[in-house]
Image (cartoon, rainbow, N blue to C red; front, side, top):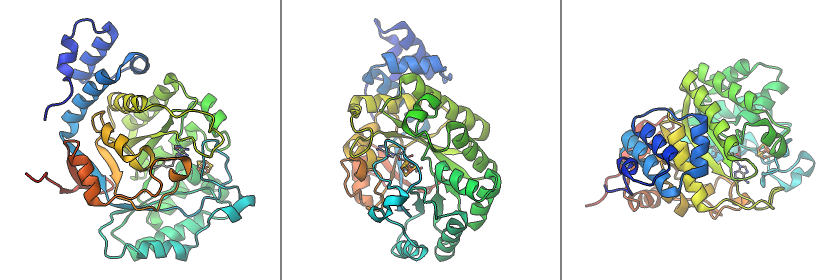
Length: 381
Ligand code: V47
Ligand code: SF4
């Protein structure tokens, strides 16, 4: 289908900034962008230019296909020992009566609710509860696996894992092996935030640092597990911090190839310690997605997480390099509604999600966690 100005047209334009023209040529020739070029894109790349280039790369990789999957979340608790300033969701242990703590039986009941339904993944993520330890989560995972062997279990951010393994006095490798043996198959991308210490120390000083996050994902990849990577953007970080974050992920991906996708997460400012910081504009969101597509050249999949971004903005990202809209979830996740997302009880049926993709001129493709294609929803002629 026809897209906004093609990338090839861009480099014919007269009057275009010399550096931006060079970058367009590099992208068309499939050459890797340097960190300085990444920063330059943030400084000078206007949204139309970035969209054209990101679309060019996207079309070459995926054509018109946009992936989604059928998933549900289990959030075992929002009680957390950490105090990330952007978090609207957690409650300290001393205030745990304001939060929730699910028992193993309650979590299994949630899985039972999906009996006979074609969900392919359960995503387990939550606060870091001082009493929910590695043994507890191994039991959760193995019981879910026994109940529903076909379900892919993706669970636990590097933040949760780091705490669990330290408490259990195990190395990262030993701890991950235990969870893998219990049935854990991949790791979600949360907890990455911004790796640069000067930002991390301001927004989430007390949890695992950037090197620790990367080490856990690297070890998981070495054990044959896949994982995702996120970046929390639009708060106090600058362009250099964003590119530094992407650069570290791109390097690890060169080494292991274990990341399934990159998920930029927009900072939402409701009811947290950073509420005084304005959220970034829609244009800035689109520029960021496009630059992610251009810079992260070894990540095939770029995901817009609609429960956080809102469905209209998520649909727009499809013209800015995104090929994945996460899933048809129901209201089992609370992280974003509590932080001020437009999506207060995020739920979208398969039909609604397909319509969203089709009306953007793209083709919905249902996938599993590791991007095997399960079903293509062709447009009705
Ligand atoms: O690490 C917390 C983010 C993350 C806010 O791997 C916030 O498939 C914006 O990582 N504004 C956890 N973001 C969720 C996560 C995730 C989500 C969807 C899919 C996957 C995946 C992973 O949520 C945290 C943090 O970066 N977060 N508070 C907030 N106020
Ligand atoms: Fe805890 Fe995660 Fe919230 Fe940080 S973002 S306070 S680690 S639940």
